[in-house]
Length: 474
Ligand code: ARG
Image (tube, rainbow, N blue to C red):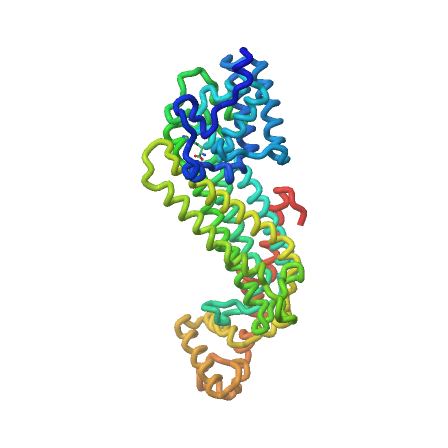
């Protein structure tokens, strides 16, 4: 190694090397640079490079001693940037060139050997997949945290009644536990989508080169194993040019956001004076700068709003990716920001849930009073008549007449005078009207998927068993 070699650093601006005699135009460089956002890939980049260097040494493309210098040099570089001891330089375009440039400044020629059999194209694809896998793991843990919280509250409120709604009109009584477990189900499917997307993301692009792989005798399996991937990607053109894994995660995040927005909206609604079904804990409410009495559900409103941007992220990712020729195109850099936004928005929303859910104050008496509306038992009364042999359509008609009759008299269905019943239908009796009782009605719906307290407890136990195999204590 000559003195000159070890002192010089790679030329800036994305490895323009000796090909150019001038630097990139300032405005062009500002458009081109990605380091302001791809700095998030710092540790993924370093891990990927360390695995690549060790592999290069293992197959004899670089000396073991150089690999050691690279590995420890990269730790130092990442530490410096991470701790803010050294600023990232936008003139070096991206995180990859920043890391490599600093590494070479530190260790000289060994640093210049790192990029052997590698391009920034397979490098960034690898970094993004590593990043995606870490994000998916964190999101899955976040989802489980929310499911634990929902499960606890569902057990606590397995037997508390509230009206269930269709069209936001009171429909039939259900239990609060059942209502909460609906969200646990949604989140369970969201979890599955992240697991599934992560499985497909877990292939290692390293070795794909710029687009056409490499003629050098590298060991792709070794790098893949070292980084914890399932195996190397199978097509170099595809591996450097697809960001479907990012789009899939963003979609999973958007759909989860949509689910959480429904929860947010219900909390907003439930915490109105008009509904009065719930109150958010103080730690999850905001005050008003003007109106001293206000207790605003900002956090629930933000849960409701976040999918707006998550959906935007998915649309951005897909739109940027569409129509791109094989293989790498710089357009792909533009997928990074929506991808980060999606996974970070998902995490920030999930982080709030366990304590928000634990701190919810449910007004169970008010819910119960609302569920006690006898009109909510109309379907149960019809089912009671069916259980006595009546065809359902006839039962539906009779109960409809009963409701109309009650309305005409200005009384509740339960208070229609017994003497009036035979004229509506001979099958109606005061005993039959007992089916209008909300507790009795809900208790009867013990089937799988039903809201009866006993069934809620069964579902809570099923969920608890699943969560405890994942290491949670409920
Ligand atoms: N910042 C770039 C990106 O995100 C890295 C790859 C650059 N490759 C290139 N051929 N210019 O896509």
